[in-house]
Image (cartoon, rainbow, N blue to C red; front, side):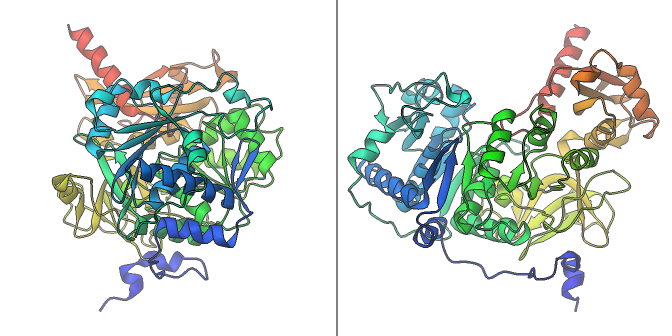
Length: 568
């Protein structure tokens, strides 16, 4: 019979005091929030720019909105879509919906009409909360094609003190309620003295329906349950990351993203910490608010840290409160982690997760520095959190476990794995097999239990039959001081099948002072002949999603179009 360390070798890496397994809570995410309200009623729950809302105030606002939503017909199991930026209305709406047992459908504010039509129809959302001057202007174009019964609109400035100058990010906004919609504040005022009905919410009921594109097919709604959310916040962010009530959490990621819903909202609610939010990311405002509110905890895409380090305010601001920095959602170059630490004294922990893992998949504990894989140069993303398992299987069929040190597909099992995709049993059966989530990511595990994520299966470049993983090339490019951002893709090549092309955004001080050939030579001296980029193109900025992930797909599609045009 194998020992627990043979089955989970990474347990030997756990810091002292961190258990291999936690007791799984039977509380729902709304129970957790209301417990914190009762314990810390006057503690700050939200810092929105320079304004503060306490836990008691937040709960009162959510109660009033819940009464209004109930009167509009929202009840247990119904879906409510939130098409919002990082504003207090997101939290108020989420907790109001959960009090009624409703399911929250967070939407990306950048979605266009066709996308919104799909998500609103697929989720069957009954009510939508939108920003009156931005996201509602897109939503109104699809209302005739979706089952939405009511639209509630709100303004970015609704929860800022009247009569005071607006923050720079919001200086052009003013209150302009569309007459055909319900007003958020008016609804709260109307039902302020009403007690909402409190639904019986099952821990295994769906809390969030978060859409993920996956690797194939149409977008899928990941059903993140209340138990998923509470466990993920407890095991990853509280236990591994050591986030507590004395911390101040920065809302660096969009709240519609799983990092925002769990790494910001759920952990702040669980421990009673304040959450700093500021509409949308802006490096100058971010640095100002870190200093003002003494932010200690950040989890964000690596491009967030790129932008902070590049901003002229970075060395001018007092950032001494920062203690716990994490990055996920995209590969983290080891060279940049060193560069950031040299400039700030702060180490960025590389994490790995997906919507289907309710944020945490593989995490390094706060007190541990991750190793670098000598073969691929990948910085480790840590290892499974308590109660969880991970292994590497063959990338072709996913049936054969790979030995330590060999590449394959990462699969993960644990209490944070979603039960499935909304209304898509076939996709669920393909992605989740016997409780194991097949991630579609390629990686390896070393003999001690450290995991390394190399790349997505779909991003593999085939150069004359040799495999080239883009992030390995990107990591080498980041070692050059001129490189601010880079993304590597495969482009068609008549001789090699594909060849490696790197898109590079240069640091301002190097623009016009370095050539593509110099960077190619830099890589050639550090990589095997089939790996180094044969083509480098300088561009002002790498295209990104709103969550900060580089969009290699966009670059690949551009190259394919160029190739087709050339052949014509």
